[in-house]
Length: 192
Image 1 (cartoon, one colour):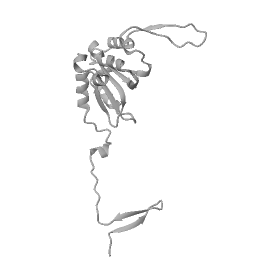
Image 2 (cartoon, rainbow, N blue to C red; image 1 turned 120 degrees about the vertical axis):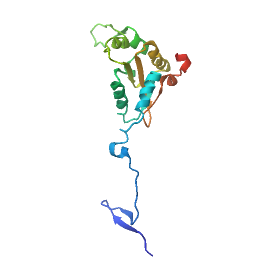
Image 3 (spheres, rainbow, N blue to C red; image 1 turned 45 degrees about the vertical axis):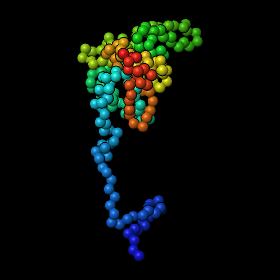
Image 4 (cartoon, rainbow, N blue to C red; image 1 turned 60 degrees about the vertical axis):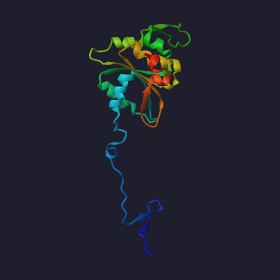
């Protein structure tokens, strides 16, 4: 009885089985040479969805880095960015569209002060260069925001037409996005 297999020792002392005369073929594509995470064919759909929906909720993988490609694509289109974290935002309506007070931390004997800051979105819109396409309010950690705060962010582009909102609402296996109106519970006819 003859067999087509032979046993070979590995460096670690284990044994593995080799087959003589058989060829194992692996499907090799472009992503094997460049890296599968670099080949994203959905950037055109990303741009059209940002223009169509104006407020998006994104879900990126835990390891991060993917959102930078989509951010850069918007930057190449002529958008300026206002990066905020949801944890220190406070009330989004007051912080983004109204003059709001800020009380800095005092250390013991210093008097309690209150400073007033201009609305973040209006201030940034006034500083936009003439050739800019608009302002993207990119909010990280938006998963901590309440439904009412997400609804305001979904309606912000209707209040300020040159503003687009991108909110990082969680994580997923691959980079995906949905309209923020769906996530916040607004339907299409209520937001209009």
